[in-house]
Image (cartoon, rainbow, N blue to C red; front, side, top):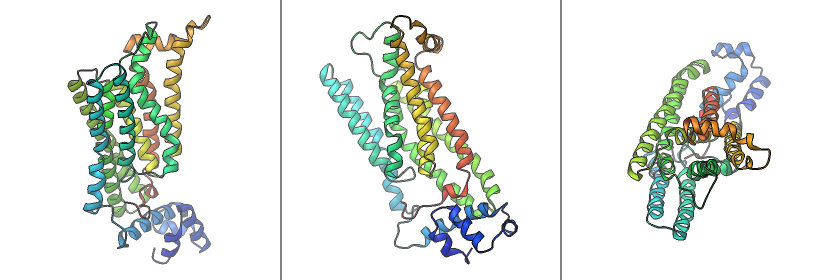
Amino acid sequence: MHRHRVLCERAVDPLEIAAGLEAHGVTDRTAARFRHRDVFSLAEEMYARVSRDAEESTEREPVPSAPGARRGWAVLAVLPGTVCAAAVVGVRLTDGQPRLVAAALGALAVALSLRVALDRGPLRVPPDMAGRTRIWTCWLVAYALLGDGLLTAGLDGGPHGLWPMALAPVLALALSCAPAVWCAHLLSVRARRKLAASRGLAEFADSVQPLILGVFALHLCALGALLALSGAVLDETAGYAGAGALGALLLLARLLTAHGFPQAPAVALRAAAVAVALALGTVFASRLPGCSLLSVPVETVAEAWGPGAVPALVCGAAALALLVHATRTLTRASAHALPSGAT
């Protein structure tokens, strides 16, 4: 480890370390002496360990676990929920055109507060990675707010004027930003502790997989409680299935992106957004001559389980795929390497 410290500190990924080790004559047999199956497995752990140690030993950089640094993003995590609650009050106290203005301003304020809250802390991602999924995330949240009402109106031959907004699920999703950030921090801290205590990647993977599932379940419980609270306070349907599936999808997508795996979340969010848009579009397209069969699948699902079942099935399937992907990728040691300068 000390012999190749310079190589590890300058490497941008584990593959660069593996190439350097092989150039220095390290073979798979050598890696086996350190309880690794091959050079690439050894390089992955060296990359994670040196990145973490280098960060902790740099006195000029703020340590992520420092109380001051943690307090900042932990407090900011409640900002989206607070702003959304204020926006909901504004929408409830207005009517007609002022209500539309209040809803638009509230949506803008919530979006800005989300950006502020997630720009630091354990769910922080580079701007270019966040840009890949922003439009799909906004569409899915907009559907959670307006989609079920529009779908119901469309199935009834409408819409005839404005349709109702589902405020309770969106409020719960905004409030769940705080437990999502805190759960992500819990995962990062516990995973790094397990990495420091493990004697190999296989042992680390076996120990961190239950942690990933436990943190995910913890967030779902928090989201379920927030949905129940929001529904009771606003006297609306909580929408457990649809909002719960969307919340799970958004958490997993952000978690994977923050840990350096942006491709799968981008695909999952795009697929979910396109799927709910197509489901909604088929209802209105079925009114065209000879196209009545287009809406049969959506009508069947809506009649059997309600309009909320459509986003629940779509987002649930995408979230399940990301959960399986997370249990395979977030169990790698390099996924929990601390980037230089992270806060």
